[in-house]
Image (cartoon, rainbow, N blue to C red):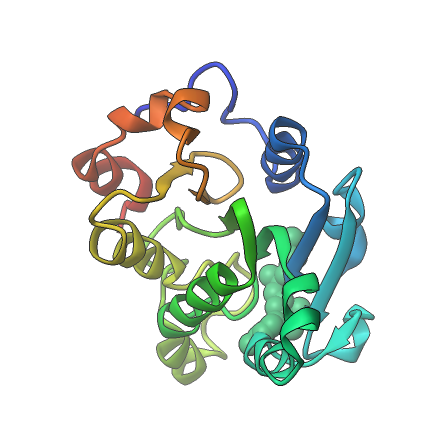
Length: 212
Ligand SMILES: C[S@@+](CC[C@H](N)C(=O)[O-])C[C@H]1O[C@@H](n2cnc3c(N)ncnc32)[C@H](O)[C@@H]1O
């Protein structure tokens, strides 16, 4: 697989990818969709004002609810509040389901500041079992406990990269680390800053990253 040379390494964690983008662009506001345990990732994100959401109280989120509920809450605010609520970088790691992630991408783009970035976890499932769609997982849940589940997040990323973004307005690539970190950069100069992703092809993605 084509590695993202120079800036991005395959032994990075999701927090490293996010911190690297924060450092590169000087981002100030960070949103994490799906937090679970703050120490696993959220607390590793440096030099930003962070906000996290999760429907589970155990995660001790800043907003207790789903991503849909959070974006709907923002939509109900006045224009000034909505503007102030925008983020520079959003990490999508909530419900690992194609249709939910498509919504998360769409909503995140609406609440992203100019030149902002989205990072999606779990874009490179290890194998077919790890990529089991949520409905199927529920059906088989007792047989498939105790493995890392990535779900079909990758479908939403592929759909965004090749269908929604077919005019290449945004720069999209997957960093081959930590179960695959999909990156969407809205900076029009992103290709110059991260030149290698330009060579990242759909065939490369299919052959190596998805492995399903
Ligand atoms: C894989 S964990 C997140 C891990 C964390 N981001 C990290 O990097 O360590 C997924 C979390 O998403 C939450 N979640 C599930 N459905 C969600 C939704 N619709 N919106 C937001 N969060 C959701 C779950 O409760 C769970 O805590």
